[in-house]
Image: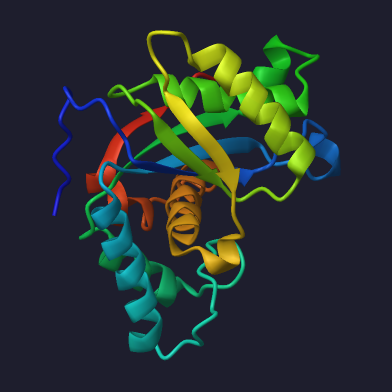
Length: 216
């Protein structure tokens, strides 16, 4: 089922953000070649609640523990990844993502800072696509200092007296949040497409895509 995106829509009730790869530039010491930041967006709370309930039910169907965390890079087998993505694509959300080839970026901007990469990528992601207004942004970050910095940065860069894209930014533990797990799985599928040129997971959720922006 393909999500219909209304270009005149001005409100996203809930936005979930997650990343794949890292923001480091020490490629000889293990830094990832790509950095992907992804938003999963619900325009109504009931749609988010329904998706969360479906993921909860999926654990029972797969005979997984109630506290099992769907996490693309570590805890899920290929079969579980495929089943998860085939299941959630029937829920009513859409996603957008930014994919950064960090080696290409580093060749152009040799002094790119890690935190700045994350913040600017987040800003770009929130500004692209259909307009977002008075949205709650939820991300899997427990570092309060970074969360405070991100809150200040995005409010200063995105919000004006006439338009407020972000109303609230808060962090949650993905282990207890089904929709952050959904975002992780979507983001992981996109990351696999670019980092390994493997599209088998990405193809399962492509119908939910608003845009993938690749600036570098």
